[in-house]
Length: 492
Image (cartoon, rainbow, N blue to C red; front, side, top):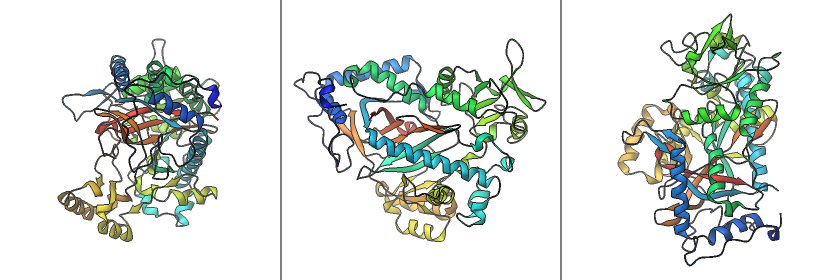
């Protein structure tokens, strides 16, 4: 689309939105790109520049009030004053060009293909371990390794049906993979609801732009689950299995079941008979063929894992191992998103695909290895040090921002259990203009594209753009004060 085909920006006001925006010493995805600004991106800049700060605040307040009324919340159990929160929504979109997205999409597809081959191998022949590409103990002693999956053939060889890949951009605007989420990745509901909100809130900003739609995710998700249902089932019954209303992501469970048009169930709604899974209905038992499960392995089946679990379905794992029902994602996929295994992903891609990674990983030092531990201890004040089993930004140390006492205390934890930690250099995350209490300021962002794998890998055009709302913070997680933006992927 040429610039003349785009709508003109609204008339400027006396208090223009970007007049006082200071471009920091980071890569700003909107304002200081290294390449000529594409016409669609320039159009977004012009339209934003013509808005006033009071007008943007008014629209944002209206949006947040509507998000809360609609129940688009997540739960924080550690906060006694505000258990249900909306994910703070920033009305300035994040824009990704068609060329940039093509690179991201191909890189995500390549990585998921390699992850599925890796998972099949470690639960079957273990060739990658025998060939010494990564240490056997890193896999076989991993707390996420599931012995129940050894020798189990899953439909189509797909273990990771729903994946969320966390990406960042560095000083040069290059996309880097920060981590994989191959168990039960969350956040896609915000991607879709953010788009709905954005089109209601800022129709003048989006008008005429070739923004790719995110509306087909629910349809694609249902299609994917049908494709991996047990062989020979003509009309698969899909359900979404939730831990229940007290789960922090329950809104998303409700949302996705509606988007797919399938029942939302809890463990008590299902039972196993003759090694097959059934759902209780008012018309009697109904066979279930594919389960999108939003609870962890340990709670899925009290007969196979945690005997105290009241959330799962007794006998489910046996039915799964016999091929009578498909679980998405498969059991034991957590090995693939382990932060220590992450360090070997470039080798894993080359081993199975014979290709160099399209998307690069962040340099990673494994503290379980003597060289990695020595380097980390010698450079703690320069590194981000992460526990391999934590998520949500908890338990990590950002060396350059830590006090001497924090460094000393963390050093003791590191020495006490080095195998629990990895370290990475501090990457200067890219920034985008964000509405803040003092005006529009630069804030760091990351991106979680969601991919679905059935007969092929499809990547939702966009993803969850999380923004660190606290000034100077690199932590974008919602549980620690982060917010979100609508991600606009432009069509070519």
